[in-house]
Amino acid sequence: MPATPIIEIKHLTKRYHHGDEPAVKSLDLTVNKGEIFGLLGPNGAGKTTTISILCSQINADEGDILIDGKNLSTEAGQIKKIIGVVPQEIALYQKLTAYENLRFFGNMYGLKGEELKERIISRAAAFGLEQKLHRRVNTFSGGMKRRVNLIAGILHRPRILILDEPTVGIDVQSKNVIIEYLQQLNKNEGTTIVYTSHMMDEAERFCSHIAILDMGQIVTEGKPTELIGAYPSCNNLEDIFLLLTGRSLRD
Image 1 (cartoon, one colour):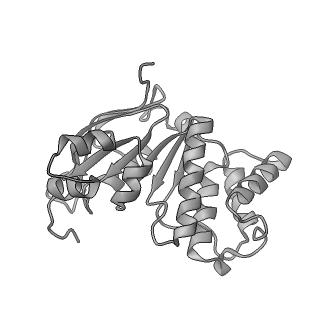
Image 2 (cartoon, rainbow, N blue to C red):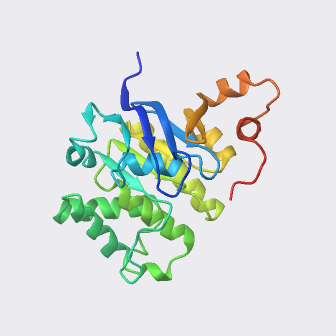
């Protein structure tokens, strides 16, 4: 069965006033329906800029983006209905309970009443939070906050889920629960996932397709196993990453 593009990025360019070089430079990228697509790169490579443009948080200077056949520049309102976003920073109200937070975000997506309540309870149970829903978020551990943060992005059952460092700084158990749930979401509901991370071993296991960015451009892309096979001197994705982006610190 041929692959069907769900995100098509063509000649995307973004410049910031403080930078000499574009943060993203004539980027071409295709994400196919049903993929778990890893967008990897060192600090300053253009990952966050690309994700921010996809989420309509900032505008591109040049280029076109089609998401599910719709043009982002003219149909952003329709596109937002099918996208879920889980940012790296915890986007929760600390003095509200987990349930109050999730009800708020659910309302933003047009969910209400019993349907919203059932979705909150169901997702909370899947993440081991059903007994914690009525506790304030500021009493939660880092792993618990990450799990609530993720639930907020999937309540409306998005067709595309964009994850920016979803497992950073959390315990192994929480990380495992999150990754396993995302794999099931992809398998059972066909959700397309776009994922950024600095954790190369996690990306190698989790992603079905990977693109490595550096200096605002793609330096390589493909399936993890194919990429490792294409670089005989490399044993894993981290080796490829260092080979292509260098070992110099990126602060």
